[in-house]
Image (cartoon, rainbow, N blue to C red; front, side):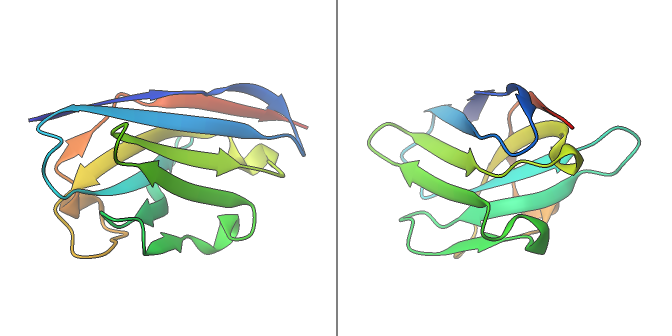
Amino acid sequence: QVQLVESGGGLVQAGGSLRLSCAASGRTSRSYAMGWFRQAPVKEREFVAAISWRGGSTYYTDSVKGRFSISRDNAKNTVYLQMNSLKPEDTAVYYCAAGWVAGTSTRMEEYAYWGQGTQVTVSS
C-alpha cells in the first residue's frame, strides 16, 4: 500500500502561483510513476501532468503547458506541481496519484493509489 497526502492548495489571484506537494509513504520502494489530476465542480476528473519514476519523462495536458511544471524528489518520496500564471479555470480539487506505469500515463485507471486532494481556488 502507498499513502499519498497532498498539500499546498489555497486561494490565489489570477496570475499568481502555487506549489502543490504530494508526500508518499508506505511501499515507496516501488518504481511508481506519479500523476496530478484535477476535478472542478460538476466536471469529471481530468489529467493534468505526469512524471516517470526517475523523472526523465514528463507530460502535460495542453491547457497547462508552459505554466505548470511537475517534478519529484525520490529521496523525499515527494512529487511537486509548480503552478504559475494561474487562471480562474484552474480552480479545482487537485489529486496526486501513483501507479506502476512505464513512463507516464494520462489514464486514471493506470494509477492504483490516490490522495484525498487539495483545493485550489483562483479568483479573477
